[in-house]
Length: 366
Image (cartoon, rainbow, N blue to C red; front, side, top):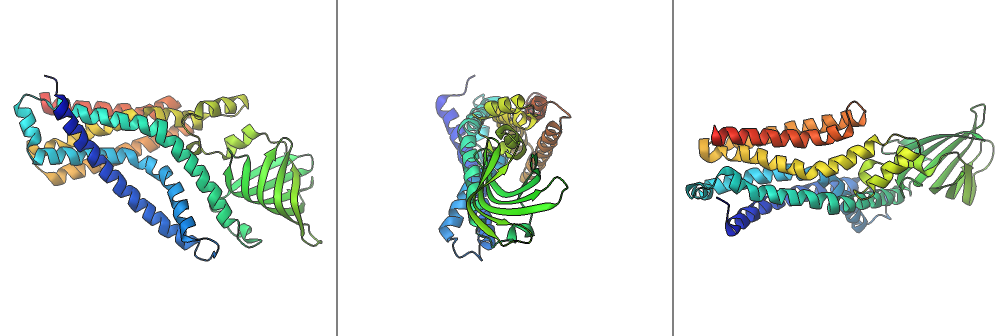
C-alpha cells in the first residue's frame, strides 16, 4: 500500500516544522551568545557600533549553523515521531495498514531536499558570509594601537617566505579574496644573516606577481624614525595558488568553487585533500540527513511500542553524539591522508543509513 498524498504531506509538514523549530531556536541561541561575546571584545572600541556587531554576528552565523543542521534533523525527527505517536496518529496509520517505512518516507524525502538545499544554496551563502566576517573583523580590529599586533596570536595567519632580500615573516589578522589580500598586517624582514632589518605594519596587503603591496604602511627600521607610506612593496616568490592552499580554509570555499580550487591546488603541486574532503562531505550531506531521519525513526518509534520518553531522548542524544564523533574522526583521518577523502566523507552517512535500516527491520519485521 502506498501512502496517500494528503497523509504524506501532513507527515512531511509536521517533520519540517519540528526541524525548523529546533534549528531556528538553536541558531537564535548561538547568535545571541556570539553577539554578547563580540560586544565584549569590542567594548573598548568607540568606532564599533551595536549595528556593526549585529551585522558581524549575522555574517558569522551560517558557518556555525552548517554544523548544526544534522542534529536539528535528528532531534526534529525524534520530536515529530514522538508527538505523532503520543497523539495516536501513527497508531491510526498502522491500523489502516501503513508500515513504518511508509510513514517514514515523507520525512526521508524532506530531509534529502533539505540536504540538497544546504549543499547547493546555503553553503555558498555561508562561504560568502564567512569571508565577509573575516574582512569585517579585520577592519574592526585593525584599529588597534600600533604595536598591539605583537601582543596576541589568537586567530592570526602566519606566512614565512624566502625572497632575494632574505627571509620574511608575515602575520595577518584576516584574509579575503582567496587569501590574496591580508588585513591588519605585520611584516618582519630579515637579511641573509637572519638579522632583523625592518618591521612594517599595514592596514592591508595584496599579493601581486613577484611582490606584496602594503597599503597605509608604517615602517620601523632599527636606529631610525618611523616612516609612513601610502604603499610599500615587499618582494616575494609566492604565487596565488600557494597562498590559497596555505591560508584559505576549505569552509570559505563554496560548493560550486571547490572543483576549481582542487584543480588549482593540484596544478600548483600542492595537496588538495582538504578541498576534496569538503566537496565529498557536501555531496554526502543529503544522505547524512537521511541517516539522521532513520536513526530518529528507530529511536522515536520505540515510544508507542515500548514506552519510555526519557529513554528515547537519551537514545537520540547518544546516537547523535556517536555519529558526530565518528564524523569528526573520519574527517581528521581524511585530512591527515590516512584514509581516502571519499571514504572519510561518506562513511558516517552510509553507516548511519545501514544502522537505521537494520534497527527498523529488526523492530518491524523481527
